[in-house]
Amino acid sequence: MSIPLAIVLIYIAVLFLISFWAEKRARGGVENYVLAGRKLTTTLVTVSIVGLAIGGASTIGVSEQAYRVGLSAGWYTAAWGIGAICMGLLVAKKYRQLRISTIPELLERFYDKKGMVIGVVCQIIIQLVITSLQYIAGGTILHVMLPNIFSFSSGMLTSAVVFIGITFIGGMWSASLSNILNVLLIYVGIVAATIVSVVQAGGMEAIVAKLPPSVPYTSLIDGVGPLGIIGWILVLVTVNLSLQSIIQISLGARDIATAQRGFVIGGIMMLPIGFVCALMGIIAKANHPDVSAAMALPLMIMSLHPVLSGVTLAALWAADISTAC
Image (tube, rainbow, N blue to C red):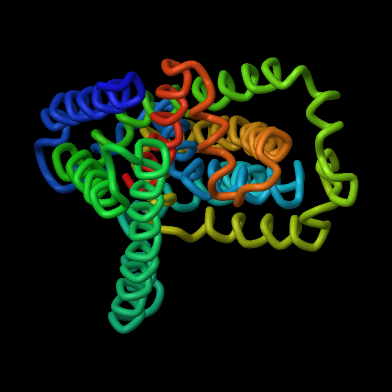
């Protein structure tokens, strides 16, 4: 058994252990299962919103875009962070005061049952799209990183079993508690892999020297461009203020202050990590300039020490799991 595969299997086992432990706390009614009994602490709110936001698009997606346009790709994840901060400062208090459980419930209260039905249909479509994309991303990660073990289909099936199992067993308690592990693994794995990759490449000067001068790889603005960055911020602020899975985190908090703190801290945590992922994409471009953007990052990761590549693989998959859950 390879070291990366062993690390992934250990990670899956720990996730299910957390879920079975969380199942005891989820007993006692729908509110306990769906909203964690409205007892989430600041830490759990923080890791829940960070885990939801830092998914496949915020890690692998950002790295792939940075391979093409440079460091400015990191603004996608930073826009998530700005949205979370806006949610904490502007809207979390109001949602808590309304004492609702879902967005459709809010629509019914202010409009009528037709509004509620439309809200239910829209939320189902949104969640199906998001969840399906995470299945695809999970299958892609496992297949590309461990091609001798997982096909795309088996990787997608494995991802689906883990996603559904964690949430089904312990509900919101399971999802929030497992995100402590997920977020820790995401940040440690991605940051460690990036630092080691920079050192192995001979430092930033050596990396920049290998990059084509026609692309503004080191610019925080050029590449994606101001309009693209503003577009991300507008869209993701709106998402943070209206998506059921995000509002559910706010509603599950112990009180208003806890919800606000959790979202603001989570937003601040998100601001830098996208640029770290973008730097991974830039390093991949310097090391593997002639392959596709989708293959460059896996090649770079699998060239690291087996333990570190295993941790990074688990981190990227953890990002996918935390969003799907």
